[in-house]
Length: 98
Image (tube, rainbow, N blue to C red; front, top):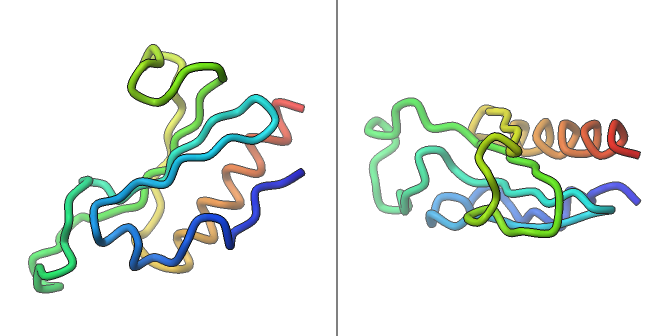
């Protein structure tokens, strides 16, 4: 079953410095603003270089307890379209593991 875009909230969720964690068919994943920080009150002109980072790794451990060499990451534009692209990438990685 593919990862549903609606599960990952809207792009504004990531402006609060919150990551989204999930798992699907033995693959764990994380989507977060990079750099991870609460920027909701930061002026747009100071938000230089912000991206969305999608990360995947095998179960059973969480992100913080997984060997970094097992984590694969991809960056996307920090936008609703970038979030759509991240979901497509996650689902593509999920298909590769099937």
